[in-house]
Amino acid sequence: MSLRTGIDVAYLVAAICFIIALRFLSSPKTARLGNLIGAAGMTLALAMTFATPGLTHFPLIVVAMVVGAVIGVPAARLVKMTAMPQMVAMFNGVGGGAAALVSLTEFSRDAGQHVAIYVIVEVLLGVIIGCVSFAGSAVSFAKLQELITGRPITYPGQQIVNAILGVVVLAFAGAVLATSSTLALVILLLLALVLGVAFVLPIGGADVPVLISLLNSFTGLAVAASGFVLHSTVLVVAGTLVGASGALLTRMMSLAMGRSLTNILFSAFGAVVTASGSTEGSGGGSVRAGTPEDIGVLLAYSRKVAIVPGYGLAVAQAQHVARELADTLTARGVEVYYAIHPVAGRMPGHMNVLLAEANVPYEQLEEMDDANRDMPTTDAALVVGANDVVNPAAKDSPGSPIYGMPILNVDQAANVIFLKRSMRPGFAGIDNQLLYDPKTTMLFGDAKDMLNQLVAAVRAA
Amino acid sequence: MTGSILNLVTVFVLAGFLGFEVISKVPSILHTPLMSGTNAIHGVILVGAIIVTGTAHGTTQLSLGFATIVLATLNVVGGFVVTDRMLEMFKSRSKQLTESGAPGQSQPSGPKGEDA
Image (cartoon, rainbow over all chains, first blue to last red; front, side, top):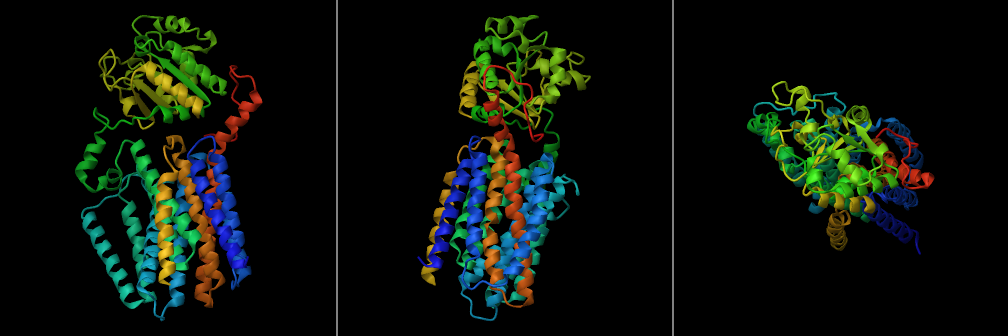
């Protein structure tokens, strides 16, 4: 087996590692292993690259890698958990920049010689997509880090300016195709950076994670384009895998937010849409609906879960399966408590009677004051068929009929899950703003049926 | 040359379909770690960066190559480390389970590395 073949086999193994990594990262049980397998594949591919015949400048290469690692490892190690999204944006951006530079450098080497049209197209794609990803990620980082405002940045005539920018980029792409000029390509690179900034500015802070996922997919495609330029199969495979799975993931993320991708990317362009966005809270705002599988995983990997029973639990006769869910979670090491509001249900003590019938251990029942003390440290509050007793309007809108009523502060938990049959308001007939909160997920359906599905989902997680 | 470009296009198309198929039904709690994991994988551009730099001629190409390797290394190293940190919560959970042993007893807040 020649050295060249050996290297190619190593690249094949690396590609298989990447595929397994993606598969494993899709499930909570195997996710961590998946990441390690990906890292192992990467290490193998890099190690074998050094054996490529004809390579020189090894000291320079090693020094550059050490510099990158010395910056990268501490940055990734020390960053706070809350700052993770902007770190992902940054690491994604530098990848896109690297892909653009690889294409540019390879092109400048062949400058002056006759270059086939398809090679120039590959270079153009690598440079444009890579630069858009780099600049877009940089702006995303600035938005999340609050270096600039997280609000959509718009100005009059933005669409026209962006359209002109797009046309100019296309014109220079044509110029590079016609002349194979490195100078034209460098100008194009700078224009693509501007395009990346212009693309991201009008997107609001809450939507930036979806945007980063899209840019991540872009970087994958830029890497694939560089793979075409260099005739490197492993770059094409890995880049395309990321491009395709990243596109699908972007779609899943925007669906999980209850928005369409076009809505996220372009909604700020029309002032009308923005205006309706700001009034969103007052009634028909956007609601996030989840699946039992999603919620099951969330609960299974929480530390502390509150179950908030209400009249809906009594109607559905779901107290036994609620207890089953609590037991399943407790068996996994999750701390579970029932937060009991004194007037939950249709009579005082309704919930205590109901849960006692299901033999819920007494020490898991918490009265309102105790429960409210625990709420801020609770990872997930599962509200089963209750509404008015958790409605923050009782605290913060003096005009509301229930203003002043003591409530369970589930809005202080990290995640809120409402298990309801529909969006209909509760007994008091008052709309609940908490249903529209970004940290709230709705699980529509019969309480008993949904709890059964949650039990199954937690067991599978 | 035409043959080799066709081979690459074939690989590209197949990898595209595979990318769509390999992730399916990802629970939303894993969306961000998965994004970060795929982010690390496109750090494979470092392979390209090393090849370009290793065959470079002249100061311009060498400086470009140096910058490219620094950026690509940041992508690889940072990507995998950040993903691993995100996934630590899943690991600590299973470890805590084996340590606690007896199911049915509620544990006081177990050993945790990070504030998620």
